Image (cartoon, rainbow, N blue to C red):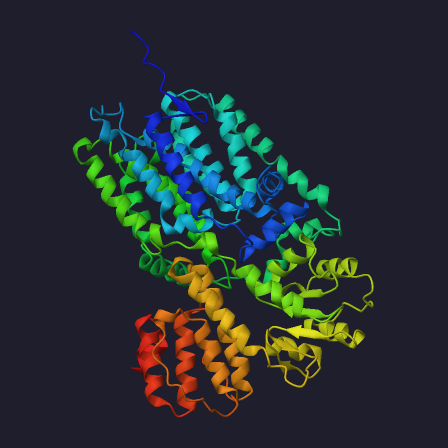
Length: 637
């Protein structure tokens, strides 16, 4: 009896059709690179870019594999550092084509059904590419983030184990363990999810004859080797010349003490959060795609049918644990790259059993996935410079040796990146409110600004911040919001950018220019940049509220609407808007969102117009907010 020929391989994984796999990889890579960010990004992107370029340490649990590779990618010849760091997301995301197709081969029937037509052979590759181009995967794959790297390592590990189960040989299991460890070195939750998902199939294979001792030793040894990047955390701990998160207490660091406020969920809360996420994911078309993959996986052999359900359930469990929960948190899309990859493999495995329908069905599915908003042709991230556009003018506007007190992520780490990496305005003291309960951030701040006078760090948050400002009465302060300004104990006025203590004869002289610039950024972002659109909406809402408190109705209205794309704004009368200063608190929204929402800006504009006696215009703005799905607006109609 002749032995079956060995299948073609790529990246150490067996594939059914290597040409189709490489074609899909190249298509995905070209598209992701063409549509990825080129400049500084929002949220964690700026923090990850900062620590990678400078050799620092980011938030727990450190992501050391991403940081070390990021240091190299930021120094690729011929590329700008930020282009290289964004490439570190796009490249591993495109490489996910290979483990997805290898896993699909392992999940197919035994023996795989012959595929006689060349077109049908490309159906699995089309499905893999469509998954990687879906907006939910495209979002974390085209900005500086850890998830694409972690997902590639995790999917490669699962695919390598699955291939060993097919051959019933332990060959490749050490490499699989190494990949599990690498996944955990980029994102521990993704590494754990992958290991949990493949365990049932591995146990089943052991019962069927896969040698237990050698298999276990190989996976465990590989996993331990894959965790070696965590030595980097210990190597940089204690440095103060670069940003190092809690480097003076690694026990607190690895226990996640700085996130203690995000613990203590009840079962009811967790179920509520899981439901909220499911509703949001259904509206975006992400959950139906995942469930379709879970259903397709039920036909898989060798115990691989649980890959999508287990990875999906674990990721949703991780989301639901958060006390501070937002269903629209973009980080959740990153975690879901793993179950989405498993779902894509399960769907791709179907085409081996449906040759005649494989190509038309796979093409139809690809069209549905790639046309989800923002569609393939509408994504505007390559031109997105909002993080820099918001923070560079702000940083430059602070008087010499001034203090910037901010709380929002879209200000905090982009400001630190500009200062600590690009060397911009090293004299400005940047205080991030959410980190001021942590002694390590004060330690870094004093190391970076040796002229600061020492203070006692005990007591409450407000007392500590108040002592700092009392010790530095000569330093001008810029504060993002009113509650932050109240910590300083000094009078503030509204300036062109935010609240400030040094007020000239007309501190609002340039306010209109800044508001118009915000509106221009929103128009440039358009519907092809949902994350950026929501950040700009939040900035406009905060600015409009500050101006309303001053009774500056016309300026407040312009600020609210600057956070809304032009095509979503109703027509406005030209007359100035006169309103009394805002005294009552603004409404508490029924559906919490992480950043901002243009519909909220429209509703706030309606409230402002109503306060100014322009009821007809107010009704038009309420209707516009209702059309965008805002619950408060719908109930008012």
